[in-house]
Length: 256
Figure 1: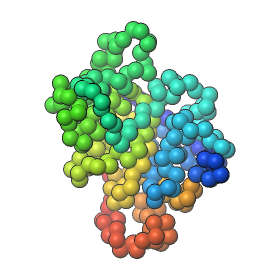
Figure 2: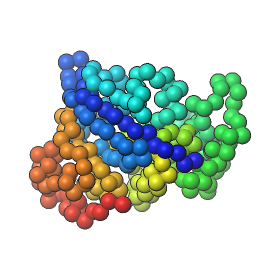
Figure 3: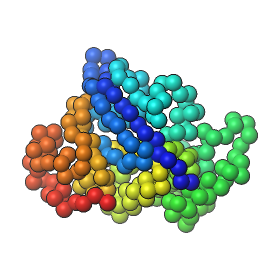
Figure 4: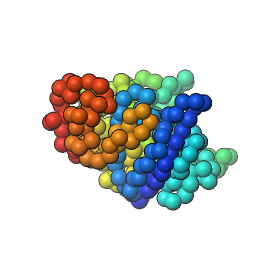
């Protein structure tokens, strides 16, 4: 399942909802296989940036390219084969076994009327093994803990085979053990090749698990680099409007 990650090039990106500017002149460039985290206060534009990147929102200005292809030129099937999106949590209205959810990741690769192939089943088995959730096989996903369910969603993304994995708050509502488990897994997945772009609100976790942070504020990129430089006391004060002493754990972090 190893494969080269997608390169991402976002240039001069702007997005407006009516009269409100959500993103303004955003530049973001990710090398293939890079692991990057978007941070910033609520309303900074992080989720909107992800929506533009995945083709779910049409920018007002600027461009989004993946491996030099404009995202707007790709149909939804092509985007789904290239980019795996992991939501923070999902509601399950009816019973589904864990392996059935993981198998949903293969949908972009299947003919609408053909069903799953041997290759699809092999991809599902490999994803379950890669994420380490074989113990959950056969379980009703509705009966899993939030942490276990998030691992199942990650396995679905792995089975999808996307060369870019995008995650919007993957650790929300998780206890500390599952937060660490999910973020450690992301590091191991990136080692296999896919590019990883995540949104996190927990600054110490972001600084510890991601070698590069991009800080957004009011729809603009205000810092981009290694955690210790991006999350300086001055920026914590200016962007989050809080005393840096309230996030002392930042001084103890070391990216992995």
